Image (cartoon, rainbow, N blue to C red; front, side):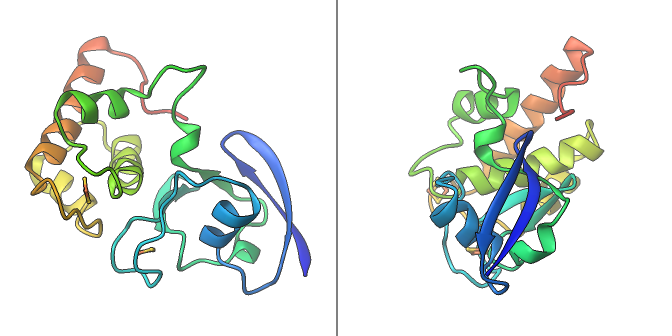
Amino acid sequence: MAVYSFNLNGKLTRVEVNSDTTLLETLRQHLGMTGTKEGCGKGECGACTVMVDGKAVNSCLILTSQMDGANVVTIEGLASEGVFDPLQDAFMEAGAVQCGFCTPGMIMSARALLLKNPSPTDEQIKESIAGNLCRCTGYVKIADAIKKAAASAKERGVETWKL
Ligand code: FES
Ligand code: FES
């Protein structure tokens, strides 16, 4: 066991875990962050996607020991004081959430895209969620939600996607 510290949703967080504990296990089992879902556990479904230093990563594939000093954002880090992130709003408005199991991972993948590219093409949107499986929606409403969120942020002219 060793202590690792990283910034989690804007707060310095210290956790004592084994060196082979994945970030997903740490989030769900040690820190109570169950918004990040566990699907396949081997990098194939994207349900466990979080942002690490601005990039979407599968938290089941990285170790907590690799997070020392990193900036980690989970789905819990998006809403602020009870107000949803514009991307979360767009998912709900577009009907892009059905059972909801894939949704946190989808949103984190899309969020990482919008952070680096606030005006993505349809192709870039598709690529950004290519590693996220959804068994319910057929992906069209999810892509629509991401497109709508990008368009509405542009209209507002604010730096919506900074975390
Ligand atoms: Fe990590 Fe499926 S649980 S990719
Ligand atoms: Fe059910 Fe995507 S909404 S898996």
